[in-house]
Picture 1 (cartoon, one colour):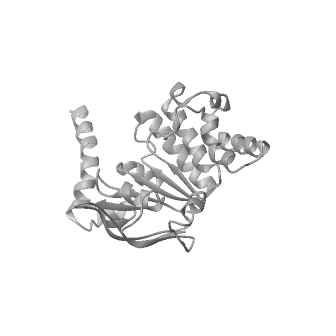
Picture 2 (cartoon, rainbow, N blue to C red):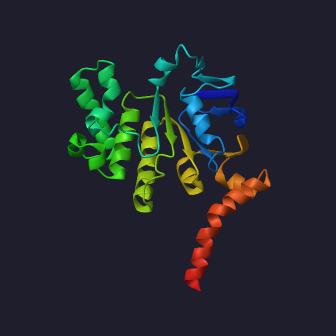
Picture 3 (cartoon, rainbow, N blue to C red):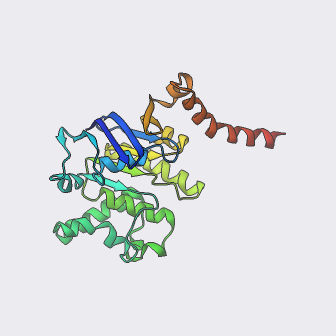
Length: 251
């Protein structure tokens, strides 16, 4: 579905992403995992065409992304950012249907799509006339997901989509996302710093450090056969606090 070949990105003296090659298979979810500043969000923005690589190429279904075709190719991508990125001056419905209305979809088709996606994302349609600031964080994220899915994209890009939510809502939405991925069978690129979220939602993990991919594979492979000491440190940094808390409670 998506292929990156030796893409890189520099900002001044900072090499945000070293030459990187990745393949994203059809109908699979791959998580880009790592600490803040590791290059995972830069990688996602390059895929979305929001920034241009300094070197290398990106292909979607074999078609190279260029400055000339990126606008049309973006219509085949769904994109969700942290906290949803909804326009605060538009209702949820207006946010969700924005691109369809821009493309001239008939009202009947838009209403049918709203109904289908509302059921899929479990967003009660009576909330759609409210503004983003009038609904909960979970409802905003459901609306953002509806907007990303509205044009039936071939690939879904998620940049820390649940990072700002409290743990209970986050766990609920993780379960719902897993069900949505299974139902729609989309190719998904998920950016997260949360190891548990990556393991739960993704078929494969690509762990980044300082602008480089240090290891790819399933979580079990990263745990049992770490490629570098950083892989072990990253996994332990998220596992040990929970284990220490349990030991304290038991003590």
